[in-house]
Structures are given as C-alpha cells and as structure tokens.
Image 1 (cartoon, rainbow, N blue to C red):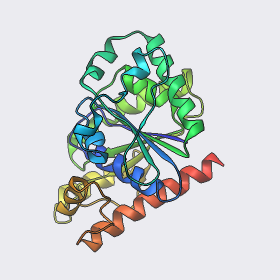
Image 2: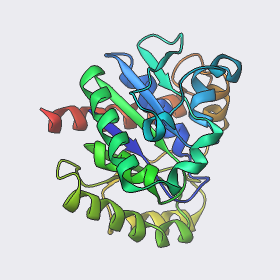
Image 3: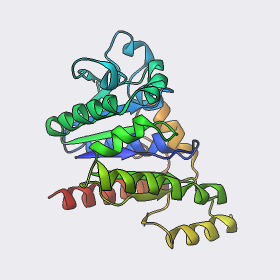
Image 4: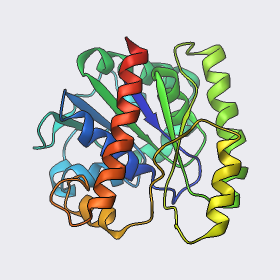
Length: 249
C-alpha cells in the first residue's frame, strides 16, 4: 500500500502526519518513508542528517538509471529514501521522469507493507509521481480560511491523475490539524470543510508535545507527557490505516 501525504500549502503539519503514519504502521509491518521535499524534514525526523551523507536520495527516482535502495533508520521496521537539495530540480524534468519514478515507487509498494510519501508543498512532477503511484492520499489542513481556498486545486490535481494515470487512487482523506479549542473561527471553518471534503476524526489540536516528540524521533504516544495528544494522534493514525487496509483488501 502506498500513501501520499500532500498539500501545496506549507505550515499545515504535513510532515508530522507523515511521520506518525510511518511510526504507527511500523508497529505491525515493514514501512518505507519516501521524502520528496527538499527541506528533508521527514528524513531528519527519522535519522540524523549526518547519517544521510553518501546515501542514495529520492531524486534518483527521477534521474537515476536504476531504483535507489533505501537506507535503514535504526527504527524497527522503518527504512528511508531521504531527501536531498537536488529534488528542487526534478519538477523541471519531463513526464517520462515522473513515470519512471512512479514505476520505482510501485516496486517499493510490492516490497514493503506500507510506503509513506511526504511531498513538497507545491504542485509539480513530484506530486504527479507520488499520486500516480499511490492508492491513498492524506491532506493535512489547518482550520483557517486560506486553507479552505486551496482545497480545490489539490482535489483537481488528484482527480485528473485518477482519471488519466492511476484509477486505483481513492478519494482524498483530509486531516484537520493545529485546531485551537477556544477559537470560534476554527470551529466555523471546520464545519465548512466537513461539508466539502472527507474530513477525518479526531481533529488534531495544537500541542507542543507533538513537536517535542518529533524532535526526539519518536511518535507522540511514546515516552511523552501529553495523554491527550497521544490519544488523538494514535486514534487518527489507527482509523486511517485500518480504513486503508480494509479498502486495499
């Protein structure tokens, strides 16, 4: 199963969602994390940056002459195809490079129980390759007006890819992140989103425990001091993965 986590707007917690899906899926099977964002935040969440030096990186999906081999992370059941600065050039390549990346990603899908792809916050060849290889797409959102305004373009991209390149791609699952309980505007925006898209439960609230956990290279439900954060992140990941597995079967 291949899952893409994407939003062409930054600052929505995309990498936090991708990392927690990796951590949770790895508790029951082999997982490959593929970082297609040149910032490399998912990569550095899983391994120290110094350990990535000299390792095959994800831009080779597009420009290499053979499938790049992922690196071990030291985390049980988790391998990584890390990001590198050269990824910024991939969106200038032609569609054949994207189709090669799609082929390589699908091969990983046959090798691992779950592949989680973290995309850059942009529309382009990397997103096309990820969506055209995936069966599921998860879109993190924050409950603010501009986040709602950007939904249509991403849905349009996913729909076009489903129609022309990947009929196995299911409708997107949207995750509401960084919710502030006391903000009435957040409640109104969430209600508006729920009427537009498949908005998954539970909502994820703004909590420092999540950033602390990822800085320690662990999920928020392991070794932290916020039971509320642990419960909602674990519950969301379990709901998404259970649905993905059920529909894949």
